[in-house]
Image (tube, rainbow, N blue to C red):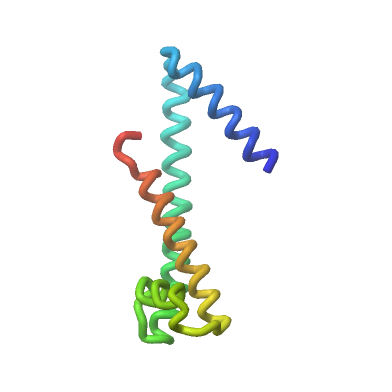
Length: 107
């Protein structure tokens, strides 16, 4: 947690000086590269989690979004696979959100 806080502190410092008009071509290139790298990592994570979801979908003959809604309404029981599938679907949604933010055209 200390590393995350330290990183956020550093980003806030940069945000503060950028808001006051500071510009840096080097920093802009670094930020662009970081976003590109993070996007690539998220895309690899997405491919991995989609493979996991596909395995569950094939095994149970059900789409993950249908499963998720039915499971959280208590209509499927408490099989260990269902908890794993639910966690995988949560990860999928999280990665999807991260990709959306990293692909934001306003960046």
